[in-house]
Image 1 (spheres, one colour):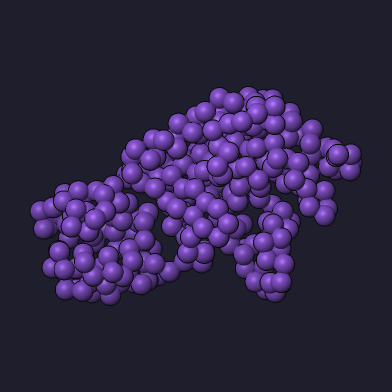
Image 2 (image 1 turned 180 degrees about the vertical axis):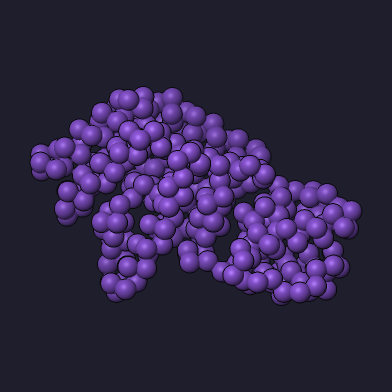
Length: 278
């Protein structure tokens, strides 16, 4: 059985997941068989083992009891659960970093992975108008660190659908939005991301309930994430993920083509740069 505590400096969640896989196989259980007494799916166990999901204390205690691991997972789940992101978003943000593809629908603001520093700062200030500058600085830093996953030239594949409202929602300084749109256009022209704009002319559409993120992984089942004000939910149930995948497919079918979308994004950026927006 696992004997010593994990080193929190060495990707503790991945290490904990690897130890879970070893302990489960030693017990002769499949992922589904371990998940059954825990009232979670085999997919969820697979995501724990891949380091995509966080292991919470109560679950860790139950795993120790089932696998006979002498409190190992309960002792170590704390290090694996630490996150610099809000609780409702932490699991999604950490899964995002391991994804091989990310598909996202953004109905109101530019997705976090595509935001510039000035745009992110304006967004966080709108969310928290009385926060200290230090608090806003920390939020902005964490958001920009997330976007570093796009520094890799090919992985993850990032494909997003932006509602036209995203292109037209400017703050106090229109040039902040202009620069953010130019940043997106630059990534498109570098063939790093795929972007489609869902125009107002599309009318009612499949994504009117809110934002959506779909993530696929090399060695774990896919996930879907939906969120609202101060809340979010991550889904691994295959039927639910399939439903949200269809939603995303319908959105791309209603959206402008990538080339038409790029033309609109650059046109809107020029309007904001010249303060000609309506």
